[in-house]
View 1: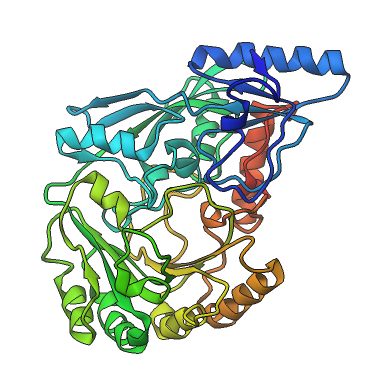
View 2: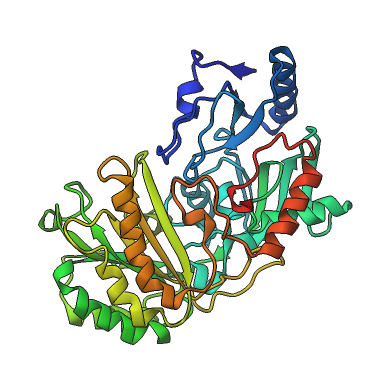
Length: 442
């Protein structure tokens, strides 16, 4: 059943977490079960025939990656209700719906002492995050989430149900799993199977300082980060603090330095970095300590509600500590249009199963976010350009595609040969191009 603009459910489906673009599709198909997908595609065909105009199918779960407008030439497939979760603690495998969120998945997994390779925001769905690579707080110990992907149950452009896996009988499905691992995926996914990992002594936390101490803190960070053990993943950044909880009142309306740090194997390996930064300046807030999956998901301090924003990101090389202080300083002014800028440390992450992007293309990631509406877009772009003039000397040559907020396409997310192969797979799965292609395909 396709919902029109007056129907219950239409408004909720067309309000993605990133609200920077308008979504007014001709209809919404609410997908509650995998079995709904083929009939929904047939209904789109019938509607297109009756109207005499072709209709594009746009799958969407939570819409964290929404960046392209969805207009009346499209039908939005709302997959948020595909949220089933099954955990097998013996094989350490999760089988989940494409709309399941990481908060729900890891709440179930941690009951067995396990975690999935979740990202920074708990409300992100598993599918788009994983298909875009998946860079989370266990990345330096366990790699990208794309490399943990075992199989994807999906529907092709003709409504046929298929299973993408390395040992699939048909070549098209063996190629499809390669594309699902980091090139954005193909067709319409409804169920994922992926590895879980043990977290025997999970520690994590967010530390905040007044940005007046930025030079001293960055000197301490730069002196320790290269020697940090590979079980520790972290992010250092500057944040324009809103006058809201959970931020301490002392920092409301100010610029803060923010360290998010996690280690699933205990506190010892993170100690050298924490000690150095605490010695450089006393934090205003410090939540480092034993935690659970919910606590881990909070350390990035993401906004909990839908936010219109645009972002910038780039993979950077091992020289990043040399430019880190100058880079973050571009966003540390009280009047800077960029409200969050971070440098994520991913060096040493292992490679998972074979796929399009299963190894980080750089050792660090630069990431910046600016709210739309508060500043003119021209001023935001100028802020990104100032940052680029600093990080360009450490450029590793590509963009983490899933970290570009509010963008319709990310043409430099994949090397040409990877992008060309993924496009060919998408065309084989959906030769009529009925389903909107991943924005990573350019």
